[in-house]
Image (cartoon, rainbow, N blue to C red; front, side, top):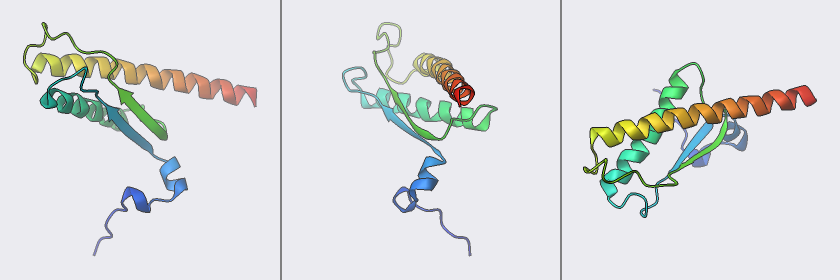
Length: 114
C-alpha cells in the first residue's frame, strides 16, 4: 500500500522551505471574463512546470505571478483564443527566465560577499 502524499497543511516548515510554491493573481479588472482569468492561471502553472522539467527549475521559496496590465482586447477578441494563450505563455516564459537569472545573480553576489 502506497502512502498518500502529505497535504500542504501537514508539511513541516523545513519541507515547505525546500520546495518552490507558486501563486497566481489575475485581477478581475484586467481580465473581466472568468474563462480568460482561468486561461492565464493555467498558463502560469504550465510555464512554471516547464521550467521545473527543464534545466533551470524554480528555486525553493514562494513565487507569486501577478497580472499587472490587461492584454489588448482588440488583438484578442475571444476570451480564450489561441493567440491570447500564446501571448500569455511567451510573456510568462520570458519573465520567469528573467526572474531566475536575477535570483541567480543575487545568490552568486551573496556567496562572494561571505
